[in-house]
Amino acid sequence: MEREEVEIVCSSCGARGVRVGPLGTCQTCGGILTAEYDNPEARDHKGVFEGEGIWRYSSLLPIRPKSVPISLGEGGTTLLRSQRLGEILGMSKLLLKNETTNPTGCFVDRGTALEMIYARDSDYTSVACALSGNLAASVAAYGARAGMVCRAFLKSNVDLGKLYQIVAYGAKITHVTDEEEAHRAMARLGDECHPITNHSPFFLEGIKTTGLEIAEQLKWQPPDRIVISIGTGAHLAMIWRGLKELEKLGLIDASKTSMTGVQIEGCAPIVEALENREVRYNDSKISLAREIAIQHPQMTDRAIAAIRESDGTATAVGEKDMVEAVQLLARAEGIFAEPAAAASVAGLRKLIENGFIERDERVVCVITGTGLKEPIASQKALRKFAGAQRIARRMERRIRMLDIGSTKEAILRLIGSGSDYGYGIWRKLKDDSGISISVVSVYQHLSELETAELIRKERVESSTARRKRVIYGLTSKGQKFLEQNEEAPPPR
Ligand SMILES: [Zn+2]
Image (tube, rainbow, N blue to C red):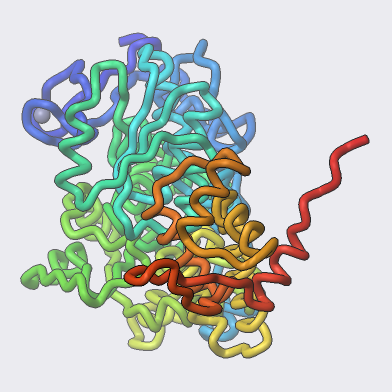
């Protein structure tokens, strides 16, 4: 097999040359797919890597040599020596792998970049992603970079920052109520669309580079332990795979490293499987870190194999622990992580406190994604600071005002030029402003403007014996709003 030939193989039924199904798995048996390749360069590798980011490890990745990368500068993230966090936790050799600096703020960019090359080189014209906010944001960004259409299927609980990203990168968004609906929608997509999941074969190879990078940054002296939050289990399993590949090349002794995964209470199937406990899923416990709250992780078996083989462990942490870890990491080290990412720090803290992790171990804690995408934990933190909370509230009000829309603004101006009633406003909108909407919509806008305290009911007039009309007027807040949003004078 030449390096030119990258073959997709099913790890369950062994089928070769498989076409990726809508769920990113084998169409025949639903097994996890792997991208197999025989790379002559990798067979007698001298441990010399050149290039930037994940492309530095091209010789260990399923990339055709002639393939042009689709890159936004993914990988090559810093491995920081902890300054204060280690001291706070009582650890002398703590290191932080800061994945928040990836192009879309999350480690998944490493995998998306590689999967996107496969999509482009296989002549797909669009890509699709369901449910995971970080992955959808990443696929949308790399889709834009590659000039491909991206379809995102999102539930209402997607973190706001991720939604903003997905919209900004121009993805076509479909709102779905649950995973089944998303899967049905993915299955309906035509042959020209390539689904990208967090267990897609090239994606998996891409995220392996986190492990390769850690080993090289430590001059091929792998750490005693790598602690990382686990959702599907893919990142943990692939970091371990990366270390094993380096061991095969004679560059490191992978047996020195124990893989340690952290899940969240209420959704910790891998922890429960490791401890041979019954899996208990409690959705009501989960409001943060949905990114890693995965009920049936696709990579469970591999993550468990990696943890057992490396003599590692897994633990679950609560939401309060994660919020504390977000603040601790930000204040002690200047890294702002999302709760799902800071879970690794919370888990490390728990395992140190219960004596499982020795204080002199050399530990690499992976911080998988940035906190800017997840507003809930940040809002919780604001509660402690009255001044900051006031600023945030004002800003939110300002955003609501900006959001008022042109029709509402036209209604406000009409009312500002003289008190008026619903039907009269409807007529003037149509005649004077060229805005043609139903009378019902006018009343809906009036009701919303009243809720926003921009207008108020001034008086009730009787137009005929049986009909009464409500006359609206501006409140002082409405007056101020119009003054602040004076139409700019026409250019001369
Ligand atoms: Zn199969």
